[in-house]
Amino acid sequence: NEVIAHAAIRYGCDGYFGYPITPQSEVMETLMELKPWETTGMTVLQAESEISSINMVYGGAATGKRVMTSSSSPGISLMSEGMSYLAGAELPCLVVNCQRGGPGLGTIQPSQGDYFQACKGGGHGDFHMIVLAPNSVQEMHDFVADGFDLAFKYRNPAMILADGAIGQMMEKVVLAPQRPRHTNEEIAEECKAWAACGKSADRERNVVTSLELKSEVMEQINLRLQAKYKALEENEVRYETIDCDDADYVIVAFGSSARICSATVEMARAEGLKVGLLRPITLYPFPKKAIADLAKRGVKGFLSAELNAGQMVEDVRLAVNGTAPVAHYGRQGGMMFAPDEVLNALKEKLINNK
Image (cartoon, rainbow, N blue to C red):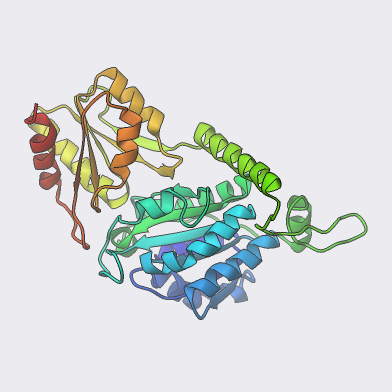
């Protein structure tokens, strides 16, 4: 959580608007301690609610500024309307979700129960966010820049989907060099096609909105958005594989679950079981082709290991498309599994269940 703040400042972020909620409150606390408004001019503001936060992000993004927020599961739910507006208005921004157990207020312990919310829209209407899933403190840092870059490349909200374990983890990290914030003149030039930077002699005004009352026009807007998502799926899929080249069975896991499952792979290999791990880094766009190729190659079964009741497993099943068995193993309510639990589940659900 602390490194998110450092990375935002070093990226040249213009503004952070947030509201405290466990287990991500250190993001804003660290920003307040570092006082970037004195060094880079970055705005840091505690809003009165998550609803206010996301709408402040909307306002900043509408002017071409690099703005962000962070929260945890219930707070992200409160932001869902604003995120749909941001997607509909095609505004770039960065949202960090450090997930906690639910539903409801649930617990402050780590969870991965927000996969559906993050990857299937995050609010009303047909839209997607770009979703990056870090599994280390270094990736928490790196994905701030990656998230902003992708958000501006595609004019779309980007989300870092972490969890309480990653957010509270302490590791060594290499910090990026300080970038200067973009000037208002640079922003007006870079974003002149869409941002509300004012009207001048050589620049027409831009109207930022997600509203269109004519159905035939709204349909064309939706088709343009769908073309954008297709481009994301073709060009921005990111994943990591471990020991998948000769694997008979493949575990699919993201974030903190993937860290745990990398140990499961080592344990399985020590027993002579050819097990590999595929870690989606972009949850949207999802690495469905990579999983489909493994299934076509002859993998005998896939285990989706998640800290939830079974969410990403649906995307794994769609990718495998009936070519091989797909099973799910998870813990809920803030509980985390151990490497041997995942290995036992793999044996029970797939290897010994022929």
